[in-house]
Length: 249
Image (tube, rainbow, N blue to C red; front, side):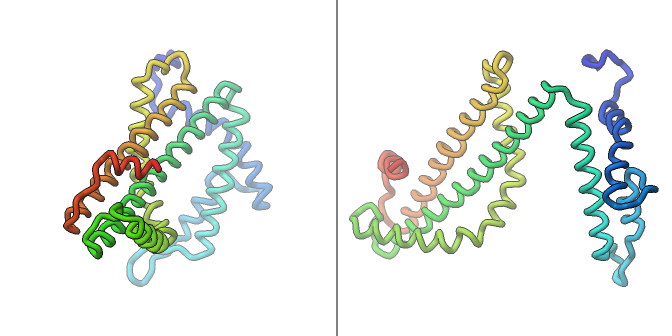
């Protein structure tokens, strides 16, 4: 309301107005794609939904043709809406800001996945540590031979839990993304760079979150898992300083 100077504004009014002004352009493009001059915006999706049939078990099911129709409708309409928003409803500054937001969210997604992947790698590290320590009665750092055995055990576990567990890492990243984004946004909000250097502030917030979450926290969590594995195996846990040097090295 403050920005538009319109006290009657409600959330979504601007978007609805933009969509209403651009649906004719979407219709023209989709008509040329599906070869149907009678098409109206949303017809494909509504038509597909209306063809949903009830199965004998009482559940709603879609035929493959219906699903294909839904996909085509959503793709054509969504792409053209984005195209019209980008070229007709945004000026240069708004495009730059939109691009920055997309890159920012993409970077947060990558860092979120990296956090989950590194944390799972820490679990593998601790599991290999426990395996060697339990079998030998000594910590893997006790001798070069034990360290070599530890690396072999870790390599085997990496092979087992690496590629096959990719879907698990991706699935865990999806809910974690929103929490990680909250961390990055809070970091950016309290930064003194926020007002004068917004782009630099976003970069700094990403780097800060990466250092504290992906490096410091994951390193600390890995050490705690190794410490617990050492205690369970009946060996003396490594000193934090030695373990830090090990991870850095």
